[in-house]
Amino acid sequence: MVLDDRVVNQYCNMLPQEIRLPAMALKDEKHWAVFLYLMETGEKRFGEIGNEFHYNSNNDLYPVLKDLVEGGLVRRYLKEGDEKTDRRATWYDVTNLGRKYLEILERLILPGPIPENKEDKMVIKVTGPYIESTTYHLEYKKKNIGAIY
Image (tube, rainbow, N blue to C red; front, side, top):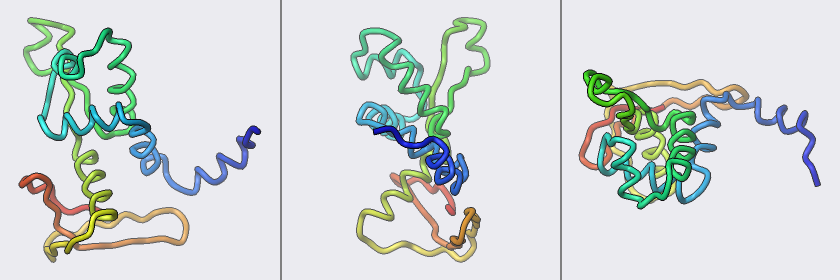
């Protein structure tokens, strides 16, 4: 059975791509593991990530990192000065979106009170009938990451 691409696109286009991409980037346990490793440890070079996961070749790790970057959850960059010593020294770190995305999932799934901070407020308007506004102040691993949605 093959789904009709026109119908699939019709429904997918009900949400902006910016909302769909982060969810699509975390498509399996490998993606989740690398994402959570970066959340836990902070910025890392490609080789450091590979060493942690005992990768056999760049072809094992690169597609996972590429998906996370394309989903907006992780950023890929060169540090100033690195290009002079090693042009291949690519760094990866979780973005603010990545931190907030995980926090939202935790808040939706895990029980517990949500702390309030009336000073922080941000609104996202989603296409369709849903508009949500909140004044939630969030923290992750003792780091203040600010207000979300």
